[in-house]
Amino acid sequence: MKWTKQRLNNLFFFIGVAAVVVMLLTFDVSFVELWQHLCHAGYWLIPILGIWIFIYGMNALAWRSIVKTKMKEGEHVGFWRIYQWTITGYALNYATPVGGLGGEPYRIMELSKYMDNQRATSSVILYAMMHFFAHFWLWFSSIFIYLALAVIGDVPMTMAIGTVLGIIVLFCLLAFYLFSKGYRKGLVVKTIRWIGKIPGLKGWSTRFQEKHAEALHNVDEQIAALHSEDKRTFYTSLLLEYFSRIVQSLEIMFMLLLFGIDCGGGMSGLLLTFLHSVLILSFTTLFANLIGFLPMQLGVQEGGFVLSIAALGLSAALGIFVSIICRVREIIWILIGILLMKIDKQ
Image 1 (tube, rainbow, N blue to C red):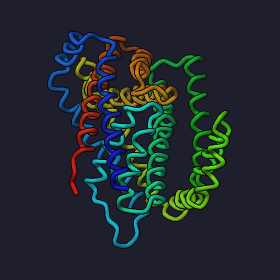
Image 2: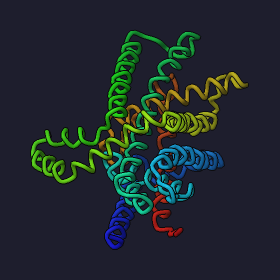
Image 3: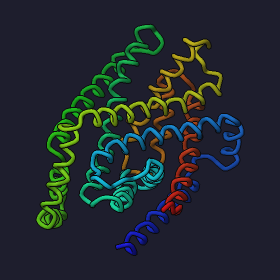
Image 4: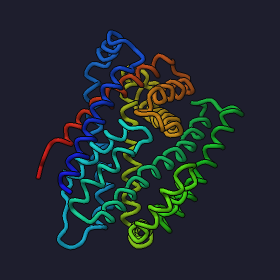
């Protein structure tokens, strides 16, 4: 088993390295232009990169709160190890198509060294659900931020914009309903059954359910148990994930300030700039997640930034700059995550 996990670790490592190479080769700008953008960012790169220390810290705390509910007496996983897996997991998620094909299996593999596979799997699935659940709350709350700014005349409001906002509200409400069902009854068994409806996978789905019926049922029970039996942990994890998105908005705010965009300056101007940053992040992540099957969301994130920034009346050039600097930040943190995979702290 140890040898198998080592081979998987190496596979994840090479996937990450290959993804970084692909990302570097698929930049939409030349290396000369890229260097010019980096020089323009200057010392602002420090807070842009550094803010992610805190974002990943909040993600790790959210996951750790779930892991602790699954641990039996005598079992223990230190926060720094979970922090390491969090960074590496997200690095692999950025690097693979359909985010989660790399990061979640890696986290399960590492966590299963400290608890049985079923509890490790349920812990990782619960955290992945919480991470995505928080996205919907970001998108939902951003609607009300936009409406509030529209009331004071800070952002435009047209019939087309109102229609789009209404669709997003309905989309989020539907997601809240589906998540509530998943949290009450689990979703692993239903997911495997759904996969069986895909042409060519019905036989695999049936065999997998028959072979792992008890394990799948146990995982679903553990998923349902968190919401029904430990609501404090549930909401703590959700709030940490939600506020990690709010903190992430500072990254965009730093870049707006770099371009001299501060909505008039002063505390009120900075607050408006921050709220604009939340809206830009919200729209961009919504766009990226709707087309999340692309590895590293190549082109999708860039388009999302350009569209969301243009929708607020800012220049497309600013959108391109923000997307490029965010892509550079991703590459650097992917490299950090991949290197952490090879650091043995046992």
